[in-house]
Image 1 (cartoon, rainbow, N blue to C red):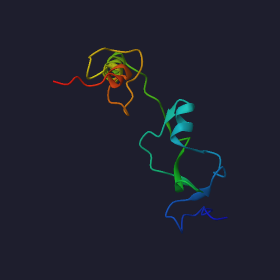
Image 2: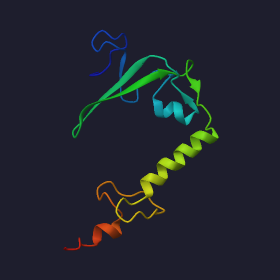
Image 3: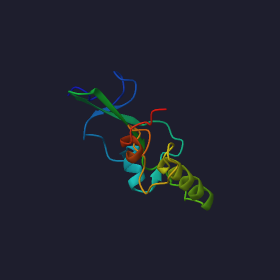
Length: 120
């Protein structure tokens, strides 16, 4: 197998092919789905696979038994999150707060992007 290196001699960290990681290890997304976070632990292993478009891909694995629970959202964190989302929903040109996030490809709301610039 191309990316099978359980003792880490070739890649420096134990490496497994896609979908063949041992039990007890999980990616950040898998930990988050269980309500956990890495909690400061070092990377325990990695998964490697190759794709035609992006070449070699890597996902780091953490030990589930050392993972810590996700910190709860406090009222202050909720306020900060709402302020951040409000800034992402506010058009920099017309200053209107929309119910959707402004597309970064446009840099402004679609209404302002469709309006031609006024000639002076």
